[in-house]
Image (cartoon, rainbow, N blue to C red; front, side, top):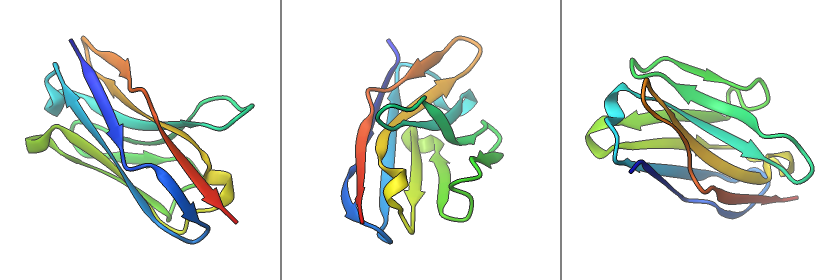
Length: 115
């Protein structure tokens, strides 16, 4: 059974930083594209960042230059380093894994940025 467990969320002041982690199990992590989505209250879920199995990355325009996605295949973990956080980054952040046989979303971790 595929499981994605996120951690690292919390409350931070504007301008601060957080690093989210997502540990995957029950799947072949190295061949999966991994991503981070977020959903703010009253808004649709949106893709924040994505990293392919080959390490190619892409970002939402709103986070370019502030967020960095990375992966450690030896640890079955994907990270999202978030710097210069803004109140509009407040949302529940979800980890996503996609491969030929997997399409799974984690339970989410809350990120709250105070002004």
